[in-house]
Amino acid sequence: FVSNLTSYMMFEVLECAWAEFDEEIKKAKDLDELIAAHERYLTQILNGAMMDNKASTEDSAILQELEKLFDLIIQFVRLEENLYAETLKELKKVSDQKLRDYKRAQLGKWSEDRKVDLSANKKVYEQVYMRLTSFEATFSKLLTDLRNRLSEHTSSDVQFLDVRLDFNEFYEEKRKKKEKKK
Image 1 (tube, rainbow, N blue to C red):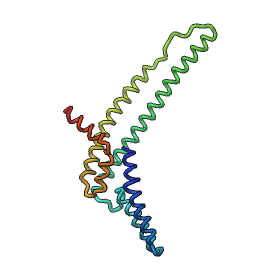
Image 2: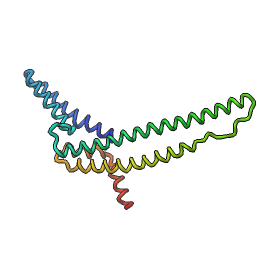
Image 3: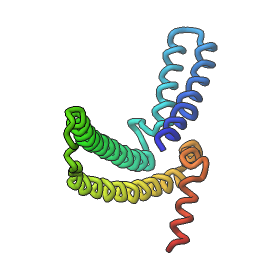
Image 4: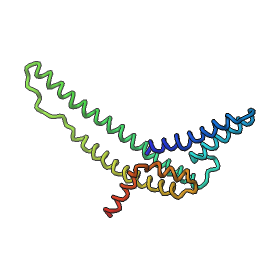
């Protein structure tokens, strides 16, 4: 999702605006024409990114959907970071136990025939799984809402963002599978 959105912004918005700006720079005869070309360039970027101050209600709604998706993505990243930290703690416990066993064996003693208690982490992993399941459902709903708004937009450029987001039809196939299950 993020890669496809970035690709749209880079190639459909920025690169197209730059190509036009580059042509206008070559044609500019004085500083005023250059400044006007730059203003059009910035306006074209803001319009393409749906970030114009005079954004239509369509664009505002799309930006709100994108903001919700980005918030969810940030929550997902935080969950992933927490999971990673918990996994490292668990790995450290196991590693410490193995080191203790090795040291005891070096001293000619039997290892402490006990395992590291990782049962507390089971609850953490169950909670992570539940949150991941929730994230997946929320992401699917938000993305569907966004794609619906994009496909109904009056601008063909914005409609193309919908095509760009699902260029390989991954989300469409997922939606079809979900409908078949119902």
